[in-house]
Image (cartoon, rainbow, N blue to C red):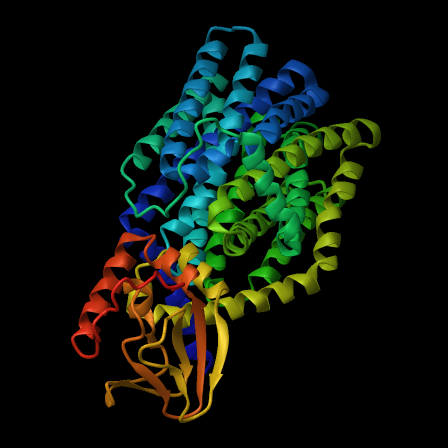
Length: 563
């Protein structure tokens, strides 16, 4: 049994990567993320060196805070654009803005221009980077069809994020050792432009959205994202822990510099080496996280990831040696991989697609503020109490809160497992198979249980139809004009003809034995099925295939049913 389970786990881990590669749209979206985040990490390392040389540890912390504050304010206001139309177009614009800003920063540093110009460009680039992840995170569910596929996509993105966490700082370290920050900025600009070019080739069936208002009401739309979070205790929990983890991440931007230069004496190149250690751990953690795709315990692993973001940092304060710091920061990378897979998958499953980018915008705003505050707090604690005390005090916050949230996260896991059961049932119906994950989850959340004793009618020929049904267990006979024309079993549905054609019921459906059904109201059924061209086509083909067997003439002037 153990060997079989291990093989199944390895198969699921391998499928997490191969399924993304076989899907050209997912492949392009994922590679664009790799380019964007490699640029972000390389830029962050080079900017940290510029800021430290300009103003020391306090200057480094202030730049970290000032870089994040505008992003925190603007991310919720700009994220509605990604909910209005095609999200890959937003990502193309964002990548272009980042590339231009970083390229100008490279020229400014190369020409020994005013450092304040570099800081302003860093703010602009960071604003764009803050919008990239919400739009990308909201795009991924649209390119997926099941919760397993979304988890796989987040595993791959987490892996690429880990590779970027390794490649960006490592590239920066090599370039800083032989050149200067201007070359790092130039390479980061090229990576951003490459990310934008990849996204130009993404093609997919976008979900139906209301027409954009003539006068954009960004504030009202942004507030809707905040309200979505405030209405869900589960989203509040995930975003709150993510904010605390981000505070520790902001502190790490300071700790990586002061630990390398002041504590272990490895110099400027050592800054990149320490951050590269995080990347090494993140790569290893992502490979391990690929084994978690089918576990159904993402909430628990999210808690483990949050804890790993803090405890190793605290231990560096206890063991202030280069080898220990490198090994412990690798564990931080493992925690980062777990958070990427579990956190983004859970948010994608909990938030409605119509406001998903705005919810991720709220997350990015919290992340930006927390990173800035973490950088400033770490700088102040280093100045007041020393490096070791600052490492321990900040490092203990994440593990303590992760332990406190453990029970709630496990309850969240169980609710997501129940949703997966409903999604799997709906996937057995041919017309639902083409639907992207957000759409089929919208149907799953609207399912209502119906029990019918043996011999009783579920629907009767000639009555007005107002619901669609899927059989969960048991069998039902379809009776048209007094004759049994079909027998339906688990995973099969009925009732769509009356809803889609706005006719009365074309047949009677009788419970052959005790029948457990799941039903959908007509409004929910029609808005989702007809909102996507592939599912609408599949539904029409199914209706045509059934009508020739049992279809009474439509009633004249039949009013539209609540289908």
